[in-house]
Length: 179
Ligand SMILES: [Zn+2]
Picture 1: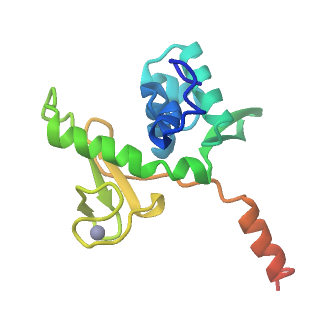
Picture 2: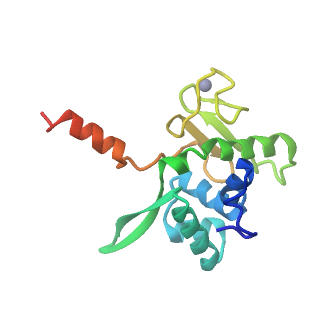
């Protein structure tokens, strides 16, 4: 899926990771899905990107196992939206780290051009990608919000991986029929 040569077989784990997470458009697609914005047209509008670019990144992220397609009803017509897998959700600290590093080191072009990572449980901003620097709790997608000031007046709770994986099916079968 890379814009560059294929790094998926590199001996260094960082290079293999960057084969997927080193592409800016792919990271922005993941941002949109974490924001709960996983439908093609909505993503395209938000990212202001050509269809071909978005299609290619979505296919790449599905092939790499970070996103999956989920059907939804669009006024009587079935279309596909994109949701996170567990593998995709595990990329959250990488995205958090990019945001936190940029807020710390890169000038913003306007007063509103900021984005913060917030621990929803305590409501505080964190300056660490994987734990809350206010209360110490580990950050997960279901206890993290992002606040992009240009996007919404309030922080947005993040999307989590779709809950139909084999683990939940196993636990359902272990529990036997519903009482
Ligand atoms: Zn906290």
